[in-house]
Length: 478
Image 1 (tube, helix red, strand yellow):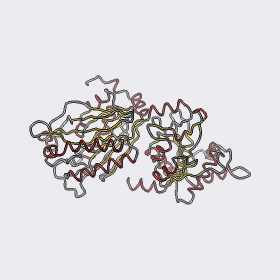
Image 2 (cartoon, rainbow, N blue to C red):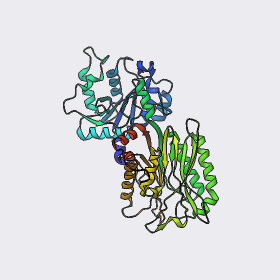
Image 3 (cartoon, rainbow, N blue to C red):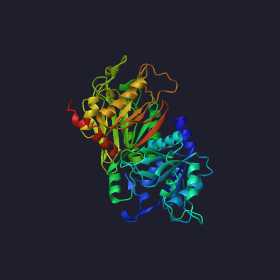
């Protein structure tokens, strides 16, 4: 996390209204409905960029777990069941002494919200001094997805308080009615993230749009297999603890370039494959990682190994051999690596994920063909070579491939070694990234080790393809 993001998180609190029973959903607590394997409230807590998170509503049977795992604090409105404004007031009382400058006011029934969207609301609020609220595709303002200055929220509550005290039976509309003409700015939602679970139709739409949670792991690759094993074990466990369905490790995780690839493949590739399969089943997560497997003569295949269980019970077992070899910038990957000749993809949580590797990113036809074969996102492990202009090229290429194929690009690069001595062999530059289907840079790491988490929104990808129908307009094979 960048210093700016850490500062924003430290000065932001979140109030999440939870526990509402939806009559049109049969009276169930819509904040505990399962979406792609995780309760709605848990999905929201995972996305909120705030140091203090207050859940206003009953803790129920999962409260202790959510407080321990997510650092959330549960409080009840006073009196219970007294309405949304009263719930907001109870939340504000709980955060008033936190030192927060901005409050994210959220509903507990919007499970496809993204961290970067909430970050954007906070930034917009700070830039303008106004309340920044999310708007749905039809233009209506989501009152329970907004960033308020804490002082302004306190003043609005004081202004609408009942004559006898308290906020019983007061609606959120009363709060927003206190805002002047220039005190509310809006930020448009994308995909299904602005959908709240009030109707069976909305619930069905969200479940159809909810793709897998993917973790992109940026690690320093080690030439010592024993160390590599420990790195992979820690990384997979971290991703599983964060609720990921799949974790992607970089190209050449087995051993970095610049080492004896064939010796490493002969000695360890079978052990490495077994390790990935074992960790996948131990943690109930799909693991994808760059390896090397023996090929012709003394060469190897640059292979992405994918192993693990789909939640539907299907066993995922796929290998992708890198097609385009990095014979560029004075490096000749083809001296030690034999090229593959087949596209590869997997299906996970109702989503097709294409697979490519590093230098493949310079060849748009591969990404377009994966999209034509149904890929909605593309996994791209990297060991990107450093050098003048290479950082800028990587970012441009990732965004271009997203636009070519209207897919989400999920890129996991190696972090460069701490001592900086990597020689001519590609050892990564960091910059692991999530790129939206219209080329938006959604998340990006620096050069340090880290992990990105993204919840795929299939409605966003479908909307991008309606807006930019390049797959329809282009000729197959072009």
